[in-house]
Length: 258
Length: 258
Image (cartoon, rainbow over all chains, first blue to last red; front, side):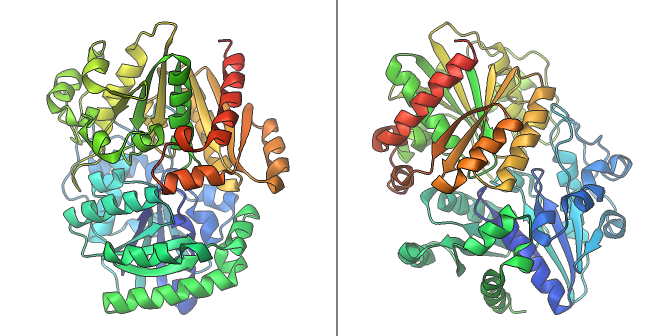
């Protein structure tokens, strides 16, 4: 399965993506977790410390590879993409394994004025489209906040998109835009996960069902907040939250017929 | 003064930018508020209802203009920018005034797979660099979440950048990246504003002073949360918050020698 996690900034995309990756790995799946947010932090949500994360070669750092496969200089504002870059052999050279999760990073913005991330996004798009998975393999992509990646169609190759929302109008507006745009790039299933729900928000959670295919509602978690402040992965430090995400994962698999 | 408001998604950039715009307008300044986030919502933070906001022509919707001024099709992934687009005459045709604020929008991603926002960002960059302001004129730009805009150097032309952070490691990591990258594109002053501070976070606020030029700490505001849920601008519905932002603005002006 290839799953992209999306949503407005701050809703908990990375927390959800990192926890899902660890749950799959714990079950024995082979997991590729892809950090596609240039303002990157999936590593810490998976439980890889900052130094080890820095040592991973990001896709954006593979200058020769991007030039060869996309026909563009990384960071160039004049990319001319080759239509079918070969990507079959990329994962092994780009990933680092920890906690049973193979982490890939799109990479960050290295230099002010250094350019956009269009060439890197094109490479990731090809990777997601062309990657052939065995039954026991899972790809989870933590997308950049917001909606620009949908203009680029970076996640076109995924089987499903999980849109995280939190109580509040703005993240729901973003979710509405994501659902529409993701449909336009041909993503088959788009599920909405509500996060940070307090007791006073139960109506909010229910009301979203009219507009979206809501797959679950996760509670606002003090455990998760503390894990973040202490630099721990939720999987290692927030057991109640992990149980909730496991239950949601069961519903996702049922919805997708897995 | 040209001021760009930046930060990780969800920290309150838009709330701060919209409130600053209204405060300046209330004082009698001529205010241009630019929504440069494709996942846009500055209009509602200024107090313009969704229908009126939709009626504004976004920069990205000005197809002919972008083609003429940047030499690129909007949404094209192969932009070839002209170095010096003429932008002096843009604001009047692109802005709509409400509550004394002239609102401009970069525009959103209209179609899944429709392309990146590089050409639009190039136009906005030129606009910010070339716009000549009189003493009583202010430009406030609500930047997209995260750091990709710094690779594009969209905000190169501003006099100062206000980086909003909230208590928590991740928004501080983002702020660190923003400060470094903004320095690289030559932004003269980079000020940090802490938002959503609770009583237990006072140490957090103090500790940031070692790393950043902290200009103020705004409290977590139930007023603002309620205003957002009710679709009201904080300026109209959260008077205590507005007073706090006014105090911060005084400090910003002092820091910038205005």
